[in-house]
Image 1 (spheres, rainbow, N blue to C red):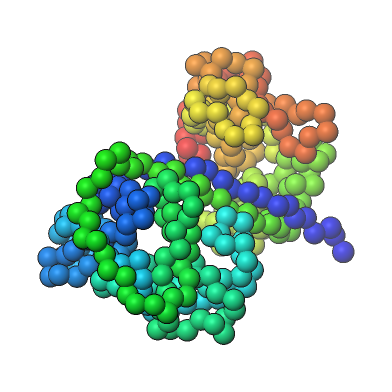
Image 2: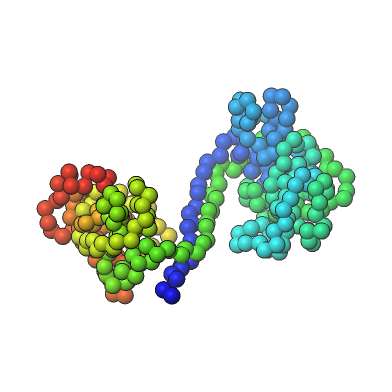
Length: 313
């Protein structure tokens, strides 16, 4: 049996967004332990609030305070919380319609077990000890058997409003390549680059996909390509990536390896970033112990004619 390759991968980036007047008031309210909704033209109160009526598409800005108590409309038990979730112990994800609202808010419900949760149960907000103007200012919901809370009638006007948030998006997964890409990765370990040729259109794809994306035919014939190639297009990177020890600015390019009918991407080095150009001839540069090229550098050859790579743009 051939070795089954697999590797843990993480895709992570911070997403920064500015807030309009409605979302700004909602998040600022959470910081002040106030839950705000927005009233539509026909009198419905939406929580969490939106800036446009989802039915009529009309702009809505009539803010109204709702109670921190409410009713579970539906729920699902989370028996194994993941990194970054609201609670570290098992909990329920619940849709809660707060008193005074016509829609439900999704958040965590802290309960001792699934048997303690049911549709229609009464709950209340448990506020976070430290609040900064994010949805996590609501730490979670908790079971509640008291009277409905009465909102104070806040108008939604605050000093020092929250004007923007940073949402950290992250995806952890395990990647396992198939037959074609496993062969490609094994070849890279020997400092070779291989693709596969379509038996119908005869195009060579690098990295190989196991099937031709144009014809749909299965591919199996290996073809060695490169190690030289042509820059087909490129971009200049001016923002330093986390955990990547490369000084900006630098160039990332699509490179059509000799013999390939699909461009792959790689970093260009060995030349000032403002001298990189379409048609530049480059070759792979390997570092000791690496399983893939570290970067590509100019070969010194004349630039490739545009007609030789225009179909690969």
